[in-house]
Structure formats: structure tokens, C-alpha cells
Amino acid sequence: MKNKILSIIAAVAMLATTTGCIKEIDPQTDTVTIEQVANAPGAFENAVSAITATLCGEFIYGGNDNTYLYDLGLPAMYLVRDIMGQDVVYPYQNWYTYWYTVEYMGPSYRFAQIPWTYYYKWIKSCNEVINMAGETPSDEHKVGAGIAYAMRAYFYMDLARMFNQKPYGVTKDDPVTGVTVPIVNEKTTLADLAHNPRATNEQIWQFIISDLDKAEPLLAGYQRKNVYTPDQSVVYGLKARAYLEMEDWPNAEKYAKLAQQGYTIMTQDEYTDWNTGFNTPNGAWMLGMTYKSDDPQILLNDADSSWGSVMCIEINPDPSVSGCGYAANYGQPFLIDRHLYETIPATDCRKKCFVDFKIDKFLTDEEGAVTPEALEALSAYSNHPDWIANTGLSVSGYEAVGGLPLKFRTAGGEAGRNNQYIGFVVSVPMMRVEEMYLIEAEAAGMQDQGRGIELLTKFAKTRDADYVYGTHNEAYYNTKTSAFQNECWWQRRVEFWGEGLATFDIKRLQKGVIRSYPGTDHVDGYRYNSEVTPPWMSFCIVQTETNYNYDCTNNPDPLHPGKNSSEYIW
Image (cartoon, rainbow, N blue to C red; front, side, top):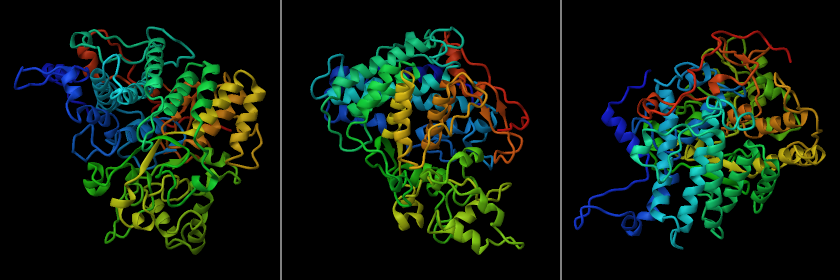
């Protein structure tokens, strides 16, 4: 599993690709300027499109080697971050094993290389556009430059939270625990890359805010065609995220409220829709990414190397029709943590997105056949209850349906459920307005708890009309956060399950992790409990970076407990 150490030539070439420098051969002058590239027909527009074109659908890490199911681009990072915690369970150990079990995550392994490859490739695309647009973009280049600044902020925001050891709210500039990743911008030279230390929390978040400050006026008045590129509202949303992390409560509240304009919270029916649930943008989606029917992840490997294959469990198991899908038919779905599921009231619509664990008691008869009672119960989740039963029973070592997710539905209705080339061509949310309402509530409550409780309650009632504040404020190991913040955290955990925010919140709130408890559905041997934020949530920088960037330090090689922890009693 070890990542092959690159030769010095390859390493220098890799470093060179992270800069915004462009040099190409021109028949007349042997060189071409940035201005010439920017003014070539379609060149600037193509460069802008490239920023978001590879977020999903392509094999960024392995090229068109479709054998790596974790080579999903940004959606893979959702899964990686979420299974490091407690809310997402990986019952059959395969592609995402090492992030769940905390093995081979050190700097010399490919699992350190993957996020580095993804994010710095995307940052390189942003740097190229910013270079082409220049310091004072023309009217023709303003929107493209604004998109580049906004997305660069998005990428560095992810990196900062993945690679720091302590969050901004704990330490801004500690030289060990308060550092993040090296900043590579449009002005970084090849010489700079050899001595480019990790930015402190303070430095990188100021850089992020600076990029967003530049993006905001550039995107003023921009009317986008769809949610797959950022506009000014997304800039406001990113500022809300940033100020939440920085614990700048007034600004977090301000920008979360600005970001809400023009969007509507998903209704309960939209949230649980069997045809469009979390596969089609609606009035709540602020930013998203989408698969196309001609994407490599769809065309190659029977579309099995795609987000839909990993997260959508409604695909016909009949091999003469489809029979595909790692989650649906190969016994490798993800599950919701049982304790989290059991804390969701029956009156909360979000509970309908996960199969009830109680069905397992009567799932099969003495001969192993699925019972009529189980099929009737499973019909509350799908038009194909027998498929759902098949999905659960296919999981070696689990053979149950409790906790199976039906939040992310296949696309295309019945046609998509019978043809993965339709069903897996889905969209994936990157930012929803619900996050802005929850940021506003938390930020308001950290200034005036009564006002925060009022906002939180108003939001929670859109999901559960019977919601009563104060019923979801478990502190777990961390008593530093207030009952109010714990209540906000619970809403975020349920609302954004599977959307890649879990690790960020655990680190921001300095929470521990609990996988071992009576009745847990976490995998035996990996039922880890940690009274503090687990060290494995601080990603290691790939060794090739520290080999050739002489001023770049690294995080410790993460260690796991090695066995089940003692059961936590709730």
C-alpha cells in the first residue's frame, strides 16, 4: 500500500504544476504571455470551467485507472471525513477501510497522497485563472476571476480544517498544533515551493477571507445558469463557514443571513422524495457538482466507480438488468450510527432516510428467506423492498437492513433504478441553505442564547413539528461546549449526514468519538472511543511534499487504539 516515492525529477515536475505559471511554445516568438493565453478564443472560459469540471466524474488520482473506488474526487473526501468519526459506519471493510480503521494513513502511503493530489490540482486551476485575469480583471474576465477566488477559498478552507491539529478557536499560531498547509497562490514561484512552510491557522484563514473579499465584488450581479458554479450568495456562504470556524460570531451570523436570500429550506417532502432526494438541485441548493453521462466514472467499470455506486442502494439486483453498485449489490453500503439514529424522534422526517433497526428482528425466517412482514415494513422506504433486503443481506458479517441509508436516491426514477448509467448520473450538494440557517442560529446563540434558541427551534420545526429545544444536547466527553452548541451540533449531524461536514464539526467543537456502546453497529475490532478529538482527524502531508519542501513540517503518523474500547454507557 505504500505510495511510491517519486524521483527528484518527477517531484520537481509535480511542484511546478502547482504554480500559476504558464509557458507555451509560440510559432512566432517561442513564448507566449499570460495575456496572450487569456485572450485566445475560448481559452479563459475553458480555464474557468476546468475549476469545477473535475470535482466529480473523473479519476483525478489514478487517471483512467478505474480500479480505485476512493478516486471519486470531492465526493470521496466527504466519505473519508465522515467515516473517521462515529456517525457513518462502514460495515464491510474494503475501499474506505483505512480511514475507518485508521491504518496506513501516514505520509508514505497513498492515502496521504490522494487529498493532496485532489486539492492542489484544483487550486492550480484557480491560480491559472487568477493569473490570466490579472490583478485588475477586465469586465470580460471579472466573473471568471470571482469564481476562481471563491473556489480557491473553498479548497483552502477544506485543507485548513483537514490538516490542522487544533482548530482556530483553540490556537491561531502555535508552530506545531496551529499550522495547516503551505499556501500556493498565483504568485508562488518554483523557488518558493522549496521553502514554503505550513501556514498558521491565522494566516490561512486571513488568506481565505482575502480571497472571498476579492470574489464578492467580482461576482456582484452575476446570474449563473445553474448551481454548479459559485455566485455572490455562495461567497456569503463561504464567509459564514469561515467566520464560524474563526468564532467570529457577529460576522458568521451576518453572512449566514445574507447567504439565505433567494433560497428556501427543503420541505419534508423534498427531503425524503424517492425520486429526487439529494440527487437533483432544488431551491435549497446553493452549490453543487454533477455527474454527466459521458464522465469516465460513469462510462468505465459499469459506472461502479462513482458516487452513485457508493451511496445509492436502489439498483435492480438482477444481473440481466443491472446487478451493479457497490452499495446496492456488492455488499458495501455505508450505514448510519445506531445511537444517532435512535436519538432521532419518529416525528422527524429525516428518520425516514434510514431503515429502522427494528426490522432486523423479523427480517428473515428460519430458512433465511425474507419475511412478508419485513417486505411490508421496507415498503415504507422504497418501491422495491426486496432490493433493500437484498442490499442488507449481501453485507458479509452484517446481514441486516438496520441503518441502511436512503437519503441519496438514484436519478431518473424507475428507469434509473433499472439502469445504473441513468441512475448514477446524479448531482451532489456542496452547500445548502439549511447550513446557513444553522450557522446563523449557532452564531446568534453564542452572542445571545435566547435568540439562538429561537432561531434553532424555528429551523428544527421544519423537520419535526413536535421538536422541543433541549432534547438533543448530549455533551459526550466534551463538556467545554454549552448545551446550546451541543443542540446545534446534533442538528448538523442529522441534517448533513454523508455530506462531508462531520470531521470539521468534531474538530471545531473539540469533540471526542464514541463507536463502542451497547448495541452499536460499528465493526467489531474498530469500535474506538476517544475522549478527545482523535489525532487521526489531522491528516498527514504526503512525504513527497516534505522531501522537497524543506520548510514543511508534518503531523504525527496517526495511531489507533488497536482494539475495541470499553463500552460507553449513554
